[in-house]
Image (cartoon, rainbow, N blue to C red):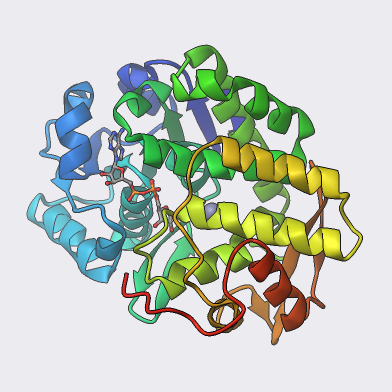
Length: 361
Ligand SMILES: NC(=O)c1ccc[n+]([C@@H]2O[C@H](COP(=O)([O-])OP(=O)(O)OC[C@H]3O[C@@H](n4cnc5c(N)ncnc54)[C@H](O)[C@@H]3O)[C@@H](O)[C@H]2O)c1
Ligand SMILES: [Zn+2]
């Protein structure tokens, strides 16, 4: 499948990575191609990419804690040592961390080298590789340093997911739930009915699900590349989600897991406001529960989450913009959510109303 989107094409096919050289030639990607990957991903899948380039891969560690300028610097060092010039391109092979870090290096080295994204996690295949955002964290906050830098191509091979740990797979699936919840009731309903086949990595359901997710994200981003309006709907579940992640110092939750809680909070708040029928919230909650266990939140305090939320990038001119569902497949963005409302919903999904227990993680 192909989705033409702005200046680049998203290729999704079983074994798409085996056709990579031809795809990159067709996209006009320069022939000197530097692969940036992580040792873990390269060990599992490096063989597929050896024919792409005569240059050694640039391997960077891919934990969230390595997503900083120091790692970008290591990529620059390797490029300079290999005498890379403007006739070179970067091919990012990995999860969202590799894609964001390598993408930022590509955006900035020699004022920009062509970039190809080859996402290897479900989250990266349905979310981070599409939309042209690249960047790294600063000690003071996540993704504070970055650029809008569309790739020359995105090549998605669902076969790469075969080696992905189940928890990572689930973490990506929550973002697919998000797409269904904000934009597509049919996608949501298919998730409900196809869940066992998805967990079995059945290509007949996995491929269309990834393609539909990319289509939804691409369509939204195309209309609002710089996130002034519509793109904000992609932040559904991310207000409370990001706050939960930062409060637990990015150690307890995979991003998607925190977003799953965030979606439950937003849905609860929407029901309390009379914007969403309780049955719709229950459908969303049932799907999330059906997908498997989430890390616990019972020791966290709603007040601490509120404080973390107030430091969020989604605070624009002092107002917190919150995406609320009005049905499965439809949302509204509001900017008048009160602390009390958020606190009540956080408590409803299981957080403490009182002070926190120690959470050293
Ligand atoms: N740019 C964007 O628009 C955007 C959107 C969403 C998320 N993100 C970013 O994406 C990052 C999260 O990405 P992620 O969830 O992919 O995490 P990740 O890149 O840390 O990868 C998760 C783990 O999976 C391993 N892995 C990767 N591919 C594998 C495979 N095929 N088989 C086995 N193991 C594999 C990695 O080694 C890593 O340990 C965050 O930093 C987030 O900020 C960016
Ligand atoms: Zn997300």
